[in-house]
Image 1: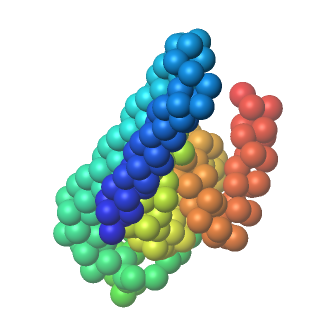
Image 2: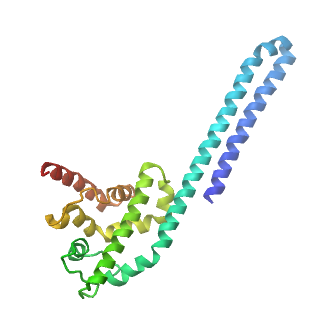
Length: 231
């Protein structure tokens, strides 16, 4: 549907440009009939310049349309690649940690290797399972961070990304909100804090009108200032 709409828009630009060129030529012909050939010859350079300008407008509109289409296609591909490659990983995380938002203790267990990590039933995960789920969660969020950075920088089309994955992106942010907080705080000062962790993802989500993450954005600025003062 989007491709059809873009094709129609390009056709409209070409159509109206053609109409304008035809009107210019018709006007020249009418002027020649009414005022004579000399007037037409005198006006020919102006008419030629007008036609050249209109052609430039058509070329610019076509180039812009192609760039927008390519950006949408790149966004669709990037989202599809992330979605397809992480489907089993997301199912694995849900099977271990459950479908709801993780707790602060679970977030600490995901960030700090020295802390235990409990599954959705309250059972302590073994070292191998804990390591695997820790890597998986980080990989999921890092992938979303890259997609969000691309959208924020204009490399990807934000509206297309929102349409394709807005719900999933917001759900992951809200689900792992405590994890993001712990990463930024460095597990309450026990590890090196990463105050800019997932900031691109947060910024993109704030553009999706998530009130919770608008508040987190303001807290991020405060955390940055405190981090700079304590360096």
